[in-house]
Length: 345
Image (tube, rainbow, N blue to C red; front, side):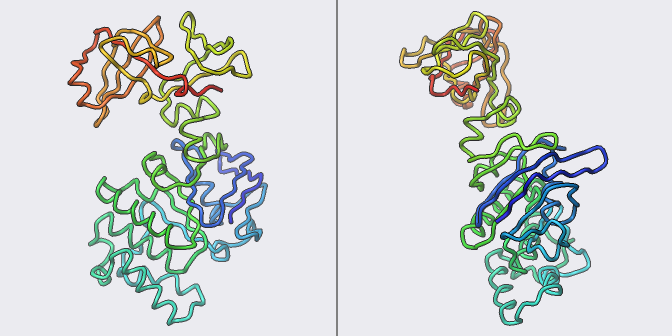
């Protein structure tokens, strides 16, 4: 459905370099990465709002690289909604019809269906100024979908919403994707959004794509230190491999398999590290004892930093477990993790 091949873009001092990306028909694909990585620039290049210096963009097997935005068959929704403040909800939704040749009867059916799905019937006479954030986002989605685009581009559509509205719009997007033939390409930095919605994803950094794959691959099997850190692999160590073990200085970690190289990295998600006041069962291939250096409140969880041989491990535990174990800084603690929880590269 969307093919980006060897695309290079220069905007002032910022560049996108040799971007290659393929999004399948009816897929929900997510672009992730830190602020300034180039996610929105790539989205706008696909939409035709930013010119390519080199490379090609194909949509539905058609080379659209030099086509104007209105000829590409895409709709784009921004995080600030970009609604026309002087137009009612109805007029905003219908606005795109001025540029599309759509049968009036078909347009009416589509309008009614979108109004029903997005629960906008009671808002049609209001102006955007009198709507909540979630309502404005629903209107923006309806306006974009009204022209029946084969491709929907979403630029951080949930980031400006409070948690309640975010969950609402996330569920709406999931339903729209399931019940339509639209291909979704969304930019987000929120892992919950990506995990809830995406079939596949790409991680961008400083104008390049670091990794593309399924959500499971990216979160469990990052292929670089940047991706590992970005997706929350907080236990990331530079190691030497020897047989089935990885050495962090004098500390030996059992991998359970033999890596192809002699030097590299291991990464362990913090939720994979189990804590106990007593030595853990031998079924855990890697069982150690260390000292709690720091406790960080992360909302629903606590992040516990444990030091052993000048190596810091990070574990996440629930608040209930935290209080039941009586955890405090400076206390000794046992911790363990399975060899299958270790990713190496």
